[in-house]
Length: 217
Image (cartoon, rainbow, N blue to C red; front, side, top):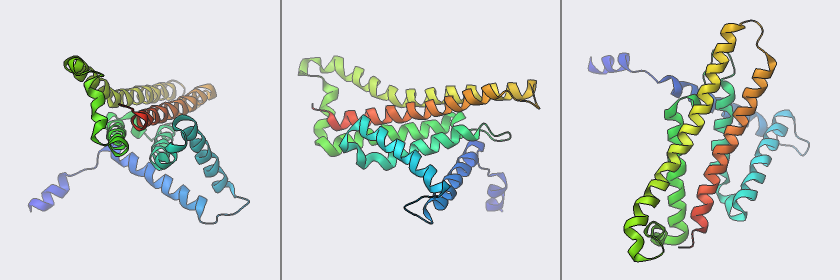
């Protein structure tokens, strides 16, 4: 009886449902793009190659040749955020990235990955950066460095949340005021915002990880 009650009262949060939908869309599109790989690609393969090629160039330009090993992480986050942002433009759907919990989860993954990469490349000497250049500055530098690093996931979370949530609110207002004829410029602006916010999140993630790789002290 307790199990039945638990199942009856259990529900999946709305943002998790939309996140699963986004995941299924990416899996389906990936399957369509790779099931028949050819030298002369079809439409699905061509679109995926263009997107991933752009991501690859961005990773190489931002992180250098060492960034190639982190391409799967950056590309996965980028694709998820891009589709999540755009799906909110479809009437009846809501962007998973318009929920702070979704963004916090991705920001925490980037935060943890940054320090794991730092330890993998420099050992536990990586944490000396929190102590400052000389020992007598440690009491001053330690809280500054800790706050600086903690602010990173907060910045990633709230920047993406604020922009996409605001975008969804604007869309709802426009649909309410003009339900049968949504102005095309509004949609173009929202698509542009979705792309920009995807690139911003990816760039910041790459900069944080690249900083951990090149951390000399």
